[in-house]
Image 1 (cartoon, helix red, strand yellow):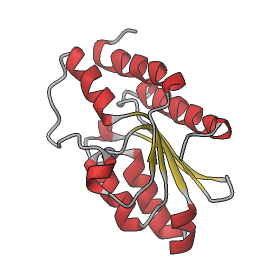
Image 2: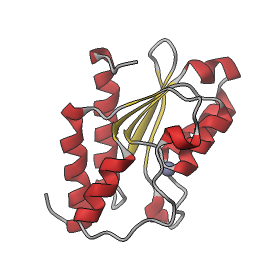
Image 3: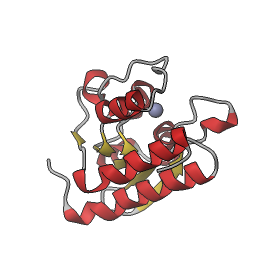
Image 4: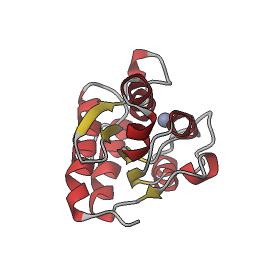
Length: 161
Ligand SMILES: [Zn+2]
């Protein structure tokens, strides 16, 4: 499945949420949970600056979905996100039974950007979602928005664009 033009507003919102996270002193990641009929159900951005490194937006949305949606509603929903789910969030997504994932930037792209910035490797291997949750449909990257995400990560790690 390809990313449709009418999905770009959800992805632009993910970029906005990532920028909000950055403005709040957090790593720039943002995600939006959208129902099968296109309604935005929930959104969040990274909150690891709290000291809890599991506070990724995709994990929060999976928990929100488990608490508020039926299994059928979860399967029909899509999670749009600024960066491809990490293994922890991909696992949560799959355990909760959520549907498709659409990401702006891949984990591979993020890994190369962070390496260029001299950021130490994370404690969790940056595997693609397909390696963790093979039953989940995944689309991305979205080239028209990846530069904006790369710029946010440069700002977070270097303090400038
Ligand atoms: Zn994650």
